[in-house]
Length: 369
Image 1 (cartoon, rainbow, N blue to C red):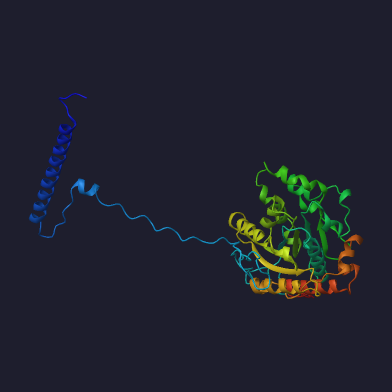
Image 2 (cartoon, rainbow, N blue to C red; image 1 turned 90 degrees about the horizontal axis):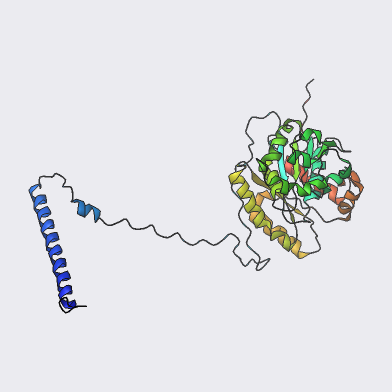
């Protein structure tokens, strides 16, 4: 640094330029004030461009309040420390006043397509699907069971040997075969089944690159909708593409809830998935029915679970509870629903009552004589 250009002299020069710029700005503002005084007759004065550019920016929006997640842990009197049960996803109520040629005893338009879903295994989905379908068929409703579970338990429980099938739900989902070609009659009048097969276990991987993969089942059921009054879809115990197909094809979801502590743990995730399907694939989907199954009157826990489910979901919970009985467990080994295996057992009586709650009662036939 040279002596001819010391630091103090350069600083003085900078401050001199700043003062000159400030004086120029003051003169500019004074001129603008004089112009405003001359136009005091009410005309609007356009501010200078410099002032317009210097206008303060709008204040940023206030931050959104922090919301607790749906699964925040709460202390519940009956079952302390368990995750809070989530609210049901909002959806349209079943159309009772819509014009329809067929209705059940409760006034619901037919056909009714119900997905029996719960991602937890061993909670009675297949048992409920098979025996509710049999009770509806006994009441006079033409009922179709759609077996989407690769294990094929709903099919074998209705007397179908899944190893000897030429076509199954695998061909419907993957190769888009007509579902009417896969439907088999059962030993009960009015009861039919679209059977599953072991090949369905690999269907979710094969569906990954498929076009419109979530709507394969919906398109298949549209061709036979007028042939049946009730269609019950037995979904697999997962939240994969097969279950999404079942939810996208259905209008209602029936959720069996085992009367035990662990059965409530995964309920929140199921309802969140139902909400996702509702928003993106099937706006008419609604969770219409909860059924408490495997009820053991000897335990207090069963009563606590039933009470809490009723308190949270209200009228959507069926009044009848399905008891845990040996006869219900034995019936599938004979390839029969409980209504055919032991019509007078407690399980058969309970499922008849459940069918009455779901449908409103036996189908009213009108004579056209």
